[in-house]
View (spheres, rainbow, N blue to C red):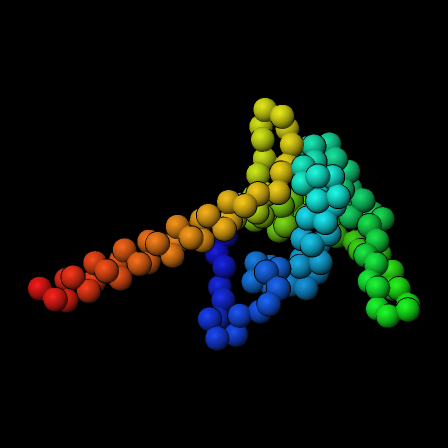
Length: 134
């Protein structure tokens, strides 16, 4: 997955950096919220159930705004959930899948990979400086 961002117009919300549409942002947040409610880890069957509930419009997004709370049903195609939400989150290192336990877990690998990318750039920058000095 490719993340495109503008250094000078970086959004405050990580979901706006990762996902292309507002609906994808909402579904990504709901998934992580669901996983964190289950101690950061859910099984393959539970993930399938979450995707099915999204597909059938059974997932409810509740927003508390002042004294009123607003509830909204969220519907998202099951196949697109796997293709556009879960798979990119796995490939970015936000979610890990344990093949032996058959569980999905919230991960911090995204941060580690971003640090590695930054270090790669620093090495390249230093290499270019050395080549320019010779």
